[in-house]
Image (cartoon, rainbow, N blue to C red; front, side, top):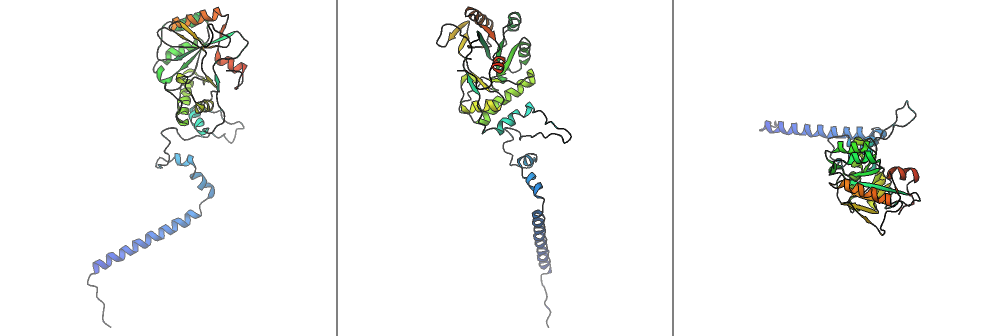
Length: 302
């Protein structure tokens, strides 16, 4: 029998090695598939959860991390019977999880009340007029400051001193921009972000929200409720440069909500408010406290 001679042994050796490598890869894939099919179902559901994927920095599926961090769920310790308190740091995450929430903040333009009360509100925070803290300290007039985080900027010390004199800080969003028509995620970030900042700066979470420019839609109401603010506050009278503009009347009425701004004429506007309240025999009152103590959400308002 004639011998078969390979004239190209080097090519034959390379071909043999290639076949061995292909067989090894195929065998490894089969073993991996077999092992994966026998994995623990409970473990598989945990690894497939959004929380697990969000914890893996190599997973590109967490595309919303730039907007909100993944929702954290605090579980009680096995040795304790009471669940942990919710953390204000999770407020934005909580609101994002409630994008289908049915609750809506109530719209308050004027409080319908038989009590001879009027409510002063001051917006924005880009100006820090001197003498305002002394005015509140001397008069004892309660007021609500609807602050915008970006407008306040580095002046939080000024407003903390006002807070020490009884001025209650409430929410006017992170940026002073139109919210009407914006997405739920954007509006929740604007509202909850401001509440989180104010909680850190003033030690309490806002209960009231005033939309910038008074512009809102149904999404704004849902976001306000989800961010812990059951009342959306508008106004029934305004003060500018010491002059009061009324809505349909020529004087302040019971339950009126008066709007002014932190401007260089703030002291003049404050005096105009006090004079108008006195002329109408009305007592200035704390809007947040009055709504919280007198009404549950869905109060008699219009």
